[in-house]
Image 1 (cartoon, rainbow, N blue to C red):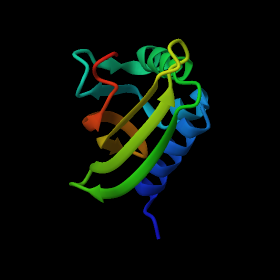
Image 2 (image 1 turned 30 degrees about the horizontal axis):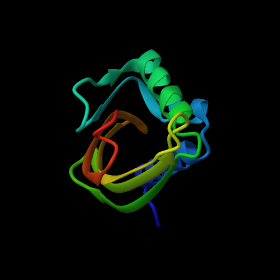
Image 3 (image 1 turned 30 degrees about the vertical axis):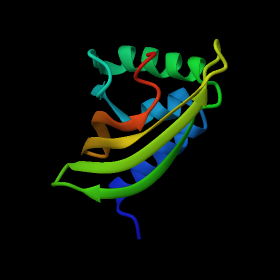
Length: 126
């Protein structure tokens, strides 16, 4: 049976697959930090994350995530293998990525998310 945190993280990914911005944001703390290994800038807080989420969903209107293993690293950090794919709305090019996301969860809210791409084609054109 999944723990409360495991359920939160699984439901968070499902919210992304449903393209429901408000539902995605409901899982994040107000000062949540998001970073990607192929980006030099991170996003922090509801306003920046809302902008980031809307931009990602606009760019990839058929964006879908597939989850793999989920493991607890310490009392508040979890690691999930994760892949995604989507067709770019402007170029019709299919992008994909597979990697690991580390989540920090406090009081049933995601307060930090860091995606580490292992393999994919998105980093060259983002």
